Length: 96
Image (cartoon, rainbow, N blue to C red; front, side, top):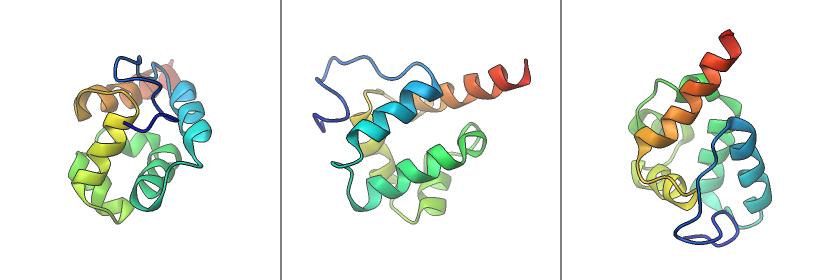
């Protein structure tokens, strides 16, 4: 795990899009290459991520699916589905 993004393996993942954005901002200096590209994409396209598979996010970010999954894990999420749920909740919040 990247210590600047997730303080410890037991760290709680971000619960909101705002917390996710802050986690990425704080860890931006540690994000390099592909993980930085994924972070930029998901922050710029939250509504796309709500419905896109990890593979689709990888393709649109120009990285491998493994790179997407590494960032998801670095942020404290156990699965891509739990990561994606954050984006779906943001979409619902925006519709209310």
